Image (cartoon, rainbow, N blue to C red; front, side):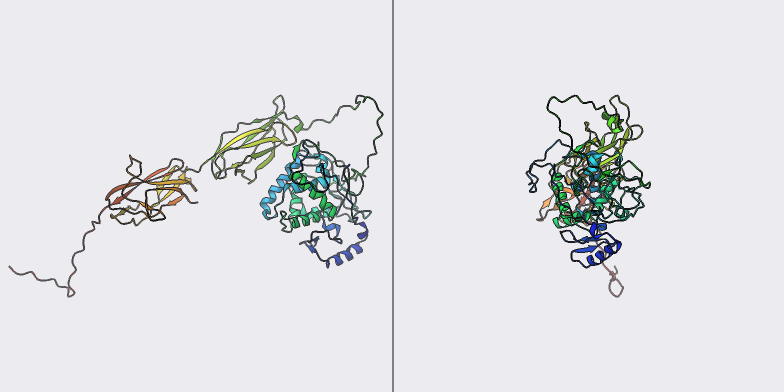
Length: 576
């Protein structure tokens, strides 16, 4: 049995409203404590604030599971070389729950990049608070199959927090309880709640909503969680206990060393709790819809099993389960749903999208199954959302379309893998190709004739614009070469030339690139002593070619006639 940590009870400090007010007033003067915009106090040091009110934490300092990670030597903390035991429910994270953690962390990378929130931190807190939603007992949308509730915060061994939600979330109209996979108390959820699955609701009983809310909660003070000090402060703000901090850090270290996805509902249920009630909290209750209070269920502690007499084990008489399989359970394989060839130029959005169909063993479509799409390998390609993964439900035809792919600058092939969330079946791989940026047309931006005298320099620089299918072709590689003729594209050895950094003549320029407007302006051109007509050829990736004529000729401008004398009269010719 996993070891348990001790627990500081808060009930004695919160038995009356007056006592809470006095404690709050005194704490407001305490060092190492500050308040957020809503007046909620939080420790700013790396130790718990001994007088911080329970209402100022995410959970109301409710009890939590104390099971330790399944390491060979959990105390002291494991080193980086400590192996992680694979293949166990304790080591794995249920698929939908894991999806929620990763989606929330990705959203925080966009919303609050300076926070550096790792998804493994959400997993560690989710493990300690609810045992990963009690082993992943959630439906395909992320809703817990039954409410997960902490004990009444009635001051009897716990904090004293009267009802704040009229029982909407916790089914208790007398006192608040911690609710859902991340164990938010209703008063905290009121301002911290988020809609993580895009259904228009903020439900603490939904793992996508709860995970996103937890991420924003941990990042709310501008903390940088890549630093240990801020990480400690964020965890303590969730549940104000040094033992809690130590336990979450152990799970965080464990998950950082590697974990794996397991089917929903197959996770190991925790056994030990910080208030010494084995396996009793958070408590599952009958399913209910937010807004309809339900009667709370009294936790029960399972009795010790009776010893089994020696001898052969009799065959099991337990009848098979009569619970009908979920839609996810019926999926046998994934099929491609006529996805076209996936090709795009670097920096462009793929015009074709990945479409996948979930089917039973007999080929029947399966609706309302969550499919995850993951970009694998070393590539800078993403989905149009900016993320490396996406998930969505199949429709009535069993099909789901992934968000559009966005090519990065890395060219070549990459793979997108489609998997069924909650099932360990073979995934379906899609290969996508990123080609280099290209142009199919080059035009000069002016039609000025380019002329020069022998030994001189051209007054105008050559500027061209690149397009592809009529659109601006930016960041396209180009080459400029002074060639012998249109029929002979070899480099010329006489006539116009460019200069390198040392002032030497060069007649081929490589490594050129069009700018964000598709424009390319070449360096100044010079002429040697050879007169004649010459050709400059510009090529781009994609096959666009432009020939530009250059003329080197002596100055043939007419000499101005002599001006008249200052008096305005010309010399008289002699009379014959």
